[in-house]
Image (tube, rainbow, N blue to C red):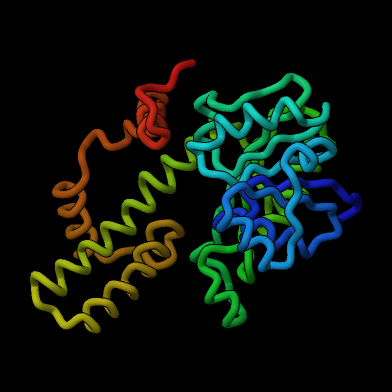
Length: 284
């Protein structure tokens, strides 16, 4: 780190706000912690951090980190963005509200979004702490994705330094557009990957509770074969057998709709995000 910044964390006592704050407190940046809820305020104070009024915190901040739920971002940015100094960065931690155009913006305030990738299933973990950190931001290294609506290298550097700090330890920060980040999160990782994870758990439950397979046996074969399936499917580590390919074809034809790839279309992304944000539709 070659430069120190002033950072304001809004929602510092919430679930993500605490994760962000726990990492920022380890840096040499000047950090202001803002929290409105009594429970969040108590958590912040118990962590040994001093609370600051929002207006004071954002007035001189180089970057304002909005660690608040998507549904609150419209009201929060309407209140705080007008109070930010010219040339500052407003950073949200999820692309949905930014992509949907729900945020208050200013021509002289840079809009940015960042999201953690979480530790890779292929990460070479070396300590018990890294194995225990499945979410990231504590011990296991992870990548992060960021989008910055500015061509100024200094703004990109500010965002990257902040992202590396709040999601530490970070290996790489990959820069995309806000729309591309929305296509990754939720479509690629929540609509597809997280749904498949839930489906795996439902299938495991069927094997145990409906088919009567002993739970220990079902979990062992599911956990091991999930690793093999992901390694083979995503990296081609050890090609599937001919018999397995036949079973996979049966599964695809039985479970997957033929038109499933429509979820990557813009209108489907808008429908997905509208549902997530409790909107009738996303207007552009």
